[in-house]
Length: 419
Ligand code: 9WN
Image (cartoon, rainbow, N blue to C red):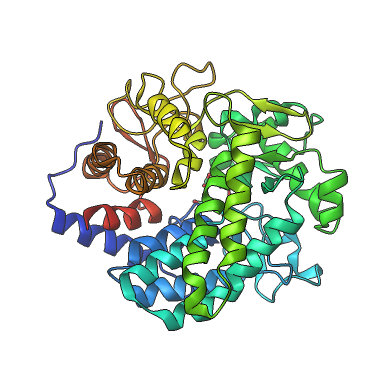
């Protein structure tokens, strides 16, 4: 494992700010130099959270720049292409410019976990900038209205993801079964970096799914009636619920009605409990009509809800602290339970620990006053970045770094953990 010279908190904070400075393009923060040369949606929300105390000006620019990619439907895309840097799949695959609802800036056609209202709330909490809340609020209201209308494919109050990329956890074992049910596609697109991340067949299926949606004109009716991948994910919906609660709290500042946002949060809570709970939260495959019984870090998304009934909270925390997750590894929190056949400590969302999910779980611990758990998550995460740097993800057993270096959300959330 790579050794780094010991750094104190102040030096670590300076390093984190330097990474974010280097990854700022003048319009937005790229997730990492090289592999990810554009603005990714939930990455940006994490950057806003991390910069809230230190660079509120930059945090505001980051959020507005991302929201500049919002479609007239309210959809906030998972990638905004501010530059011409090559990336696959890039603008020529998504062809957003051919869609009447798309903005001038080029974007992908998919969305991503709706963390943005929680990020705005975080920024307000640290700056008290009500004018900015008023400015950003309508776009986030539209984002939530889009999810409620175009993505409630199960009709019960949850938003469905229609592509693994929309989960932010693209190669999670939770998507193995629904992907395997798709036809075997062979495009033979070659991208060495992506091939290291995903087996060929998965990548071809990712592209095929995206192109089917595109060719159907990114239509909500097509998603409802035909699209073969539709999943209610507990992390996506747990984040959405937390963002609805954030909207309810911010609404008075924006001279808006908090009630619809609070009601939306309650609908999501009820649907999470009714549809995704069976001893822990699982994703539901709407096309196969069943739960996907592999327990991943996504299972803990609903813990972000302060109103989660205490029996479910305690049962879920027991799983989190057990030898299935944190109890068995030296570092928090493996992205898949380690006893699952699919667990792989070396491959992205199939085992490694991530700073962003650790941060979300630490937030969940804070809303439930689980102080010891929160401290364990904070200390373990800081230990990872101190030892291995701001890597994309980490081996949960020995803490060694994996994926990209100088990864923006690892740096941004470190700033928050140090505060
Ligand atoms: C596909 C940018 C993104 C993150 C996701 C992470 C990864 C892309 C990929 O990188 O996804 O969008 O190439 O696998 O899984 O969470 O937003 O950092």
